[in-house]
Image (cartoon, rainbow, N blue to C red; front, side, top):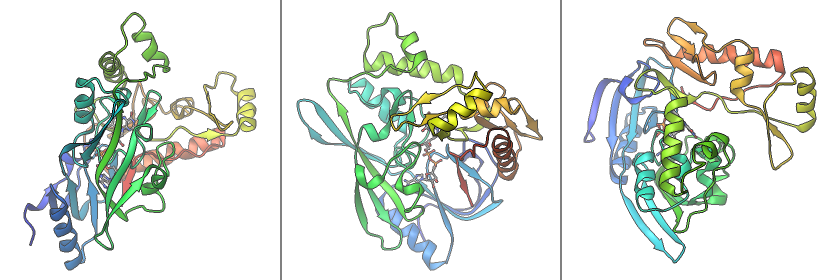
Length: 338
Ligand SMILES: Cc1cc2nc3c(=O)[nH]c(=O)nc-3n(C[C@H](O)[C@H](O)[C@H](O)COP(=O)(O)OP(=O)(O)OC[C@H]3O[C@@H](n4cnc5c(N)ncnc54)[C@H](O)[C@@H]3O)c2cc1C
């Protein structure tokens, strides 16, 4: 038997969607040895287990899960310092924004644009979290992960992680094969600021640029634009913004001249999924307690007692209507825990 083992608990406080689901067994894990014990417990009892941390990018669709392992491994350790850079190794369970504040308070640059993203450090490489023109791959040095099948620790470099837009090797070929223990980031002593995002440059127009003014501006934009999960259950953007070829985009533009877009370096074009969803008429839609947010069509919400499957069904309906109207298949950003 392992320490910290809880039985028959509600998972509602452990997911920002505030979906009601149960865990038959649940454990908080603060160290590698506790994690190994938890995996051993799962193996001995032949339990299927799921890993969660902040619960801000998951949708629980089962009524009951056999075993939930909640990653809370802490610690921030300086591993390298030069004239230009500092590297920090950060425990997977540290809250992402806690680490952002830690760096911002020291005037270190690189992650100020990623202020206030919910969730943990350990989940940040899962989907290469990003916002306002910055992604964690830009500051990523390496990570340590435990291989579930062998219990061995492995170091992953930037290349190994195969980061893409809201993608990494851990969401694809290595899905459910590794548990991230810590992540090492490189921060700059003389920051290079990125305020290319329109609303950010507008807000900072007459201000002296520093990591702290940029972080404050990002926080205020996020607070004004995104629904707060403590008020209404959600997991941020439910879908990824789709990428299409330039040729395909030009055809869409003929039909929908107002279609917004961003040109990508690879020659393709990214289209805001929120616009596609809104144009299909979903913004503000509500069925029972599952809905599409009234101001942010990209965000699906739980008005109180929606089930995970009601949210999932709504997301599937949205995907098929966007596909029908625009011929574009939206991909889900949120992890559906089955
Ligand atoms: C209001 C709101 C705004 C958001 N804005 C953004 C944004 O701007 N940009 C962005 O990129 N994301 C955004 N998100 C999504 C979310 O914050 C991130 O994806 C975050 O990294 C999730 O962290 P978490 O700890 O909550 O992960 P969880 O939701 O607990 O887990 C997410 C996935 O990672 C796995 N996982 C978690 N920890 C580990 C680990 N240690 N090892 C292996 N697997 C693990 C889980 O099994 C699950 O599949 C937003 C979410 C909300 C609610």
